[in-house]
Amino acid sequence: MRHSFDPASLRKTVLEMAYAGNAVHLGCAFSIIELLSCLYGRHMRYDKANAADPARDHLVLSKGHGVMAQYACLYELGWLDRTDIDRYFHDGSRLKGLSDAHVPGCEVTSGTLGHGLSVGVGLALAASRRKSGQKCYALIGDGEINEGPIWEAMLFAAHAKLDNLMVIVDANGFQAMGTTDEVMQLGDLGAKFAAFDFDVLTVDGHDREAISAAITDLEARRNGRPQGAGREDGERQRCLLHGKRECVALLAPES
Image (cartoon, rainbow, N blue to C red; front, side):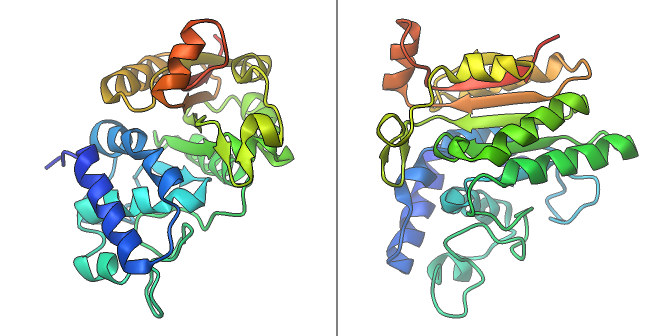
């Protein structure tokens, strides 16, 4: 049975965890709710009865500080229980403030920003060599694009023709010390990804129908090149439509 992964319900669970743990990364979790809702509800292949199913698709949450949004999805799947939610961030709890590979459904331990995409590339490469048909979705933040390993991973993904890899950029315009423009200007992300042989699609990161349609479009383009995707908030999305900086970009290699 597929679950609804209703964004309002997921946000409620995130707020309950934040209250229970008295330590939060609310903004970066809320920023990716609709993205995860689409991935878990419509696109990823997994076995609800077995979080460690060897045939599952992989989701690498590189921006690990947004993990409460993923925990909310894992709770809906039944891979986490009510005690996990009520004891979030408590002494002895298995749910920490960053993604932890010991938690069922979390592929990697992340939060040291900039490294998750490299792990996703490795998972996609292994699946490609095994011809398993598995896909890997790597969700990265725009702030961590400051890190050099992101660009190294993109170079290798294109070199290895990893068309089972999709990169999702949560381009919400903020990072720990301010806006991305204040900390380190990213310029035209779409043009930069295009220079690394990625196609670029832009969507409203809080519009599930638009996100799902874009992911479906990119997956239909599998042509021996890696894929990618990204999001920003609605205000920035409208700015993009007026020729300013993009909000939510779905990125995939050019054909």
